[in-house]
Image (tube, rainbow, N blue to C red; front, side, top):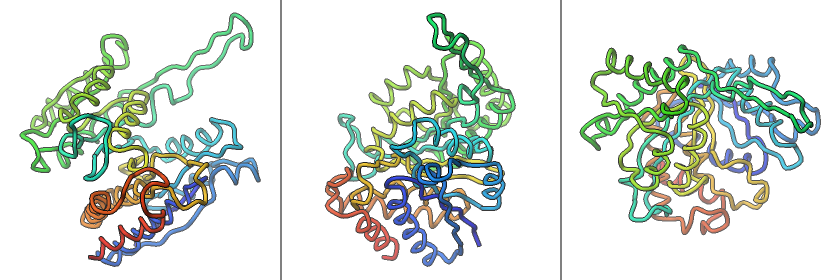
Length: 359
């Protein structure tokens, strides 16, 4: 019996989460696993009513679950940064979700802005360290509001943080790399950094990467790419990539670039992973407030997030079935992935996925 915390959140979050839960119910009946859900109202509406975001008590409550399924956080009446820091970052740090897992896969029938590229070429994964770098909040202002104002925000990493992220990345590559999938000659893990300029942070990453790889993962091919070159190759030659691992800031940037190449935010799902604790899964597209209540938002990213959750929980067959159903729907049913142009409503797209799951 899996215990799952559900945070529908803001805007279109509740709409897409409803379809993810629909797919979860359908696939659980097919594969015979059981789960129970509890819903929480963390998000913009709660903040506007109570001034509360996510408390330490809430974090302790969430630790009782096997996983968290999140819709979206972001409200137009709440100033930027409050919900992002008070809910999303608070959850990541409080639950020590030190891995951000972002598959970049182009599904059949989905348009990409990359010329002459298809599902065969756009099929890789980015593993982003999720608790260090500039996101630790170390820094501050001096003489704020004066002509001499100074702002400092420091990137911080410990060897412990780097090692545990790299260990996860090597293990993930061994299990899910292209050779493991029968799609290539090697399982390849590439470190993305900036060793020529950020000579302290990425010297640490580079040394740890090669030391761990040589000692414990000689079967995995290792590569290194500067982050700026990575951005170019994500556009020009995405087929070069298998699994990428990088720090928090660079990972934040390149995963959004990856999302647009796979057809946009309506198909991008991500996991905030604590391999030893509670992980949180979400569609990446945000709350999209202008579409709230219209029934036109694409729910496939949320459904894919539910699939990622099942994979992490060990229900691999069910996770594979959800992905297969989504691929079938994108290839054969939808006119477009864009909100309002799918040819179906949000709930109808969820129904299509469920119909394929049971077929």
